[in-house]
Length: 164
Length: 416
Image 1 (cartoon, rainbow over the protein chains, first blue to last red):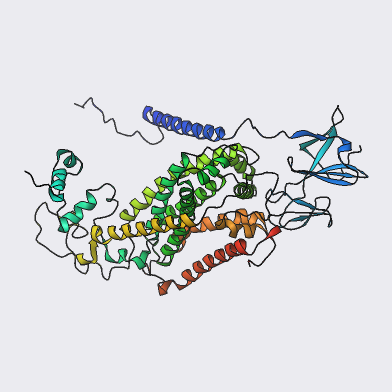
Image 2 (cartoon, each protein chain N blue to C red):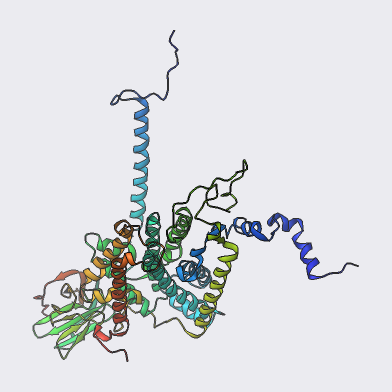
């Protein structure tokens, strides 16, 4: 007589689906799925959705605040306001290399970076040094009340002039 | 009348029920006492009962690993104390540091100790790596412990870098601005790394809090785990490295008493006595290593204390995003990289550091040969040693140039 008991650890022939195999796979998928979900949400958690940083568009004053043919450094906003006969334009003072403030050298008509020695010409184009990109130009507009507004999210090219 | 003396008082204490509950065993002199003092103590049982005689020579290890660990402990203690007065807020942090410097009792000395111990740890960890290289101690079977060690070096630099921002002064602010901008040159994920690290786009409140959490919780936790693995593996990989045994140890037939093994008593390695490998090659940790460690700890802590009384950690003006100091320099151990960054941000900030760390991790699996392990500057390893010395020399040269020979606008200057 054959014994009615069977070896519960016996493996069926390869490829044949079994309840045990199915449950094992289900368990693995659930485990690694949960792990991936936990990791993804943890990493996503680290990326802030709200920033309490200074606004990216801000009024800087009126036309008459800037004398004709002048360069004004607004240190709070890290940018230079140029008022030239052909119009206004705004160049960022943030060095494109590693983020130091460049200085305007009025005599040489160029920008110098104190950190790694990059030099930019009067339009912010790279003259010398490790900086990979020209200084950024920001859009300048006039608000309804007559004040000028800079928007650092809107970049313009070096041909930009704002006619007052 | 009972005659009270120091001796009888001591006897009364050590025989008391409470004392006996904490220290169960009498510390007999001799070999048993030496063994029990180490295995019976949770803090000391990190050590084996006996260590190889060559391994405890000061001029073999220079004690650099132990010194690094000691400095880590000093940093933990001083760091916890500083944390009682420090709030990671952009509005308060600088004021807190000023208070620690000027108002808090012993605050200045504690901050100085934290600073100098941090610099010291960067140096000792680096020198420890050099020692392990020049003695070829990462040869089989110790390859993986070198990997753990390189991880610890990276973590040490990370701890030092994150701590650099916390005073929230000009030095801190611009070093971190430059440092985190370097990350943006990493391909594809560069901007995301910076955004995640700073918790925003600028070095502000979010960045200060993140660096604080990394500095005080995340990185120390990783260091403690890595240290545990590092120490545990020293034991499991066969103790501290040393010269190869002269011959394959041959089993010496000895009449063994059933149930008694020599290994358990730490008289011999293994269960039986061996020839060519005298038990005398091994010495008791308690008598030969612990006193040395204790002495080294006292000397280092004394030096740190004296240095902290006379030399102050730098503190510049309050961080000002509007004004970049000229020149703006990273922490000194990154000035070699900053010197390269001056030529190309990608090469100095991403490529070279990546290549250095990747090479260091892979080193024990590339540099296989298993000859010349356990001795300084083995003649068989001339090429490797010269290459590594060259690497160290170049890095030091770049650091010296960046530290002393670079002035305003990163122009070359003479330091005098």
